[in-house]
Image 1 (spheres, rainbow, N blue to C red):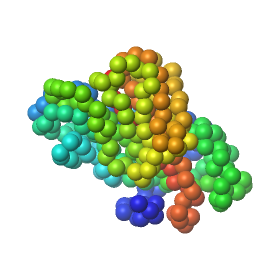
Image 2 (image 1 turned 180 degrees about the horizontal axis):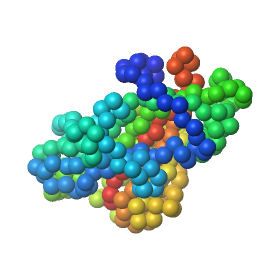
Image 3 (image 1 turned 45 degrees about the vertical axis):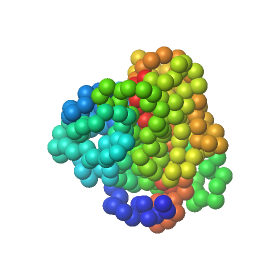
Image 4 (image 1 turned 90 degrees about the horizontal axis):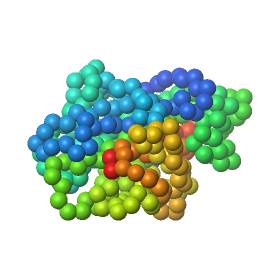
Length: 267
């Protein structure tokens, strides 16, 4: 999907933000009330913004949402809710199995100084973008549009047999777990895959944090197949995050566009 076509599908939210460091561009994730909900139940789903599992629960705001859905093997359902309320949404569960919760935000426009942009690139390990043929000038403001692409994996009802089906939902930037917790004998070599527009993305840093020790940040760079490998060590609730920044295809809209992917699961 062409970048300009993707952005033209809905309005761009315009904000001018002041960033002192790239870390202030907080993580965004979706968290279910339970990662193993009962079949025929109603599941609460909450979106959070923050760092290291410490975040602010976001009230539902339809002006910020492009897609908020449940994806299961043979059906897809919208995650509905009450505007201005927490949790961000509810979804009815009807069939057992492996499912994914998906949240894609509408694009947000913001600006920063050149020095802030350099610190931002350094934080996400993408300083090589300064060598590209882009319109970055040291004494000018840099503009960017960012889009959040969050996913969470749940196991509905009684799960029988190995659940080894990777769940992809087709987000612009998407993290997918490759080895499911139930069939992994060891946390050694736990893999997640990063795709941009459904194509594996190499050379991007993926970070992982566990809820029991959120200050410990594990990092792995994706290979040619978009795979990042982690030594997770123990059972926990995990959040994986990745950022991909690319020059805009239309500089009348912004200089750059970034996609922020997250994946939450419990092994």
